[in-house]
Image 1: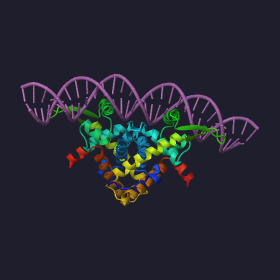
Image 2: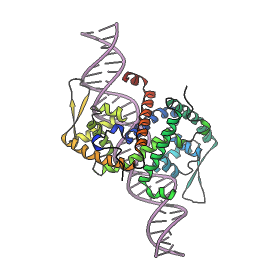
Image 3: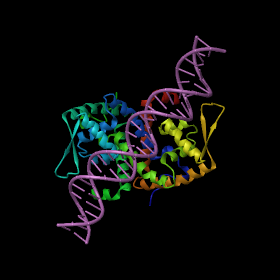
Image 4: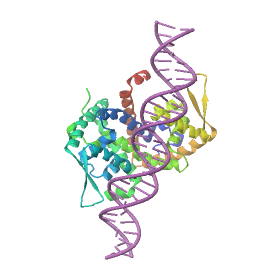
Amino acid sequence: MSKQHYRVSTYKAQLSVGYLVKRAHSLMLDIMEPVIEQRGFSFIQYVVLTCLNDGIAVNPKDICTQYRHDSGALTRVIDQLAERGLLERVRRDRDRRKVELQLTPAGRETIESLIPLVVDKLNEVLTDFSKAEVQELLRLLVKLNTTLQAHIDPAAMAAEA
Amino acid sequence: MSKQHYRVSTYKAQLSVGYLVKRAHSLMLDIMEPVIEQRGFSFIQYVVLTCLNDGIAVNPKDICTQYRHDSGALTRVIDQLAERGLLERVRRDRDRRKVELQLTPAGRETIESLIPLVVDKLNEVLTDFSKAEVQELLRLLVKLNTTLQAHIDPAAMAAEA
DNA sequence: GCATAATAGCTGCCAAAGCAGTAAGTGCCG
DNA sequence: CGGCACTTACTGCTTTGGCAGCTATTATGC
């Protein structure tokens, strides 16, 4: 059933999708982290703020699944952001297990000041890529993520569809 | 100079290359780690063995730069593998700072038994992709890595060319 | 309606990566 | 030749993520 994209006899890790995405992730972090940290935030703090700002997620759980971050670790990041007055935890009556995370005005201001830095840097590092290449890369990565996700948790994917 | 692949006004993290490669890396690990661990090895141990088997790297330093792994952490992984008799540290007179890592027969046997598992799994998860798609994904990822690397360390890249 | 399972968030603990500093060795330049 | 910068590997310390367990709450099945 599965295609022979790779063969045992010719397999080199350097051309494995796994290796390449790991390396890309690592390099991307090395470039982006300093940008964020020069403003006094850790990268994961920026990620949480972004999720809230984009409306991708409102609960810690959402961020965990979206960004694949540990639930316990995330609690502590949220603590830090709450302490700095950038977001608030709100318990809703709808489902009292859930915590709704709300950006404060200060939080919104913060994330809006960070996004331009990230966008500029992204555009800078992608200068050598044509628009078509970026589009195709994004498409393939989205497809890869969807496929991998389905492999890990088929039930959840079926439910979503 | 830099193109406008992303714009501040429309930026959503979900379509950021950084986010997508991070997620892909995480998902790939979740799939591959169990495969390796069922044979009693951590994923990073497998990576080290692979580097040596492919001849990509012979010194710890090589593996660090190739796989972007911390030097200190790597020393300890090598300790584990040496303890299990899978590789040996050899000091060469050529440059006595360097340590040459050599797979033992047992080490070679081990990695050769692991590779088919990884290749099969890779092919399995990439079933939905056409050959052309995989080729294009690899090409774009390699290009991305090269570009990012050049951004981080322009001197080293220039020297290599 | 009640018992059981499942979910969300949190806490403490542990293992592993990241970081800075050290020591041995090499290359460079006066 | 001697000094200084740089490289390589390694070692402790710190920080962080990953994991298991806990509580509160909600959903499910009988």
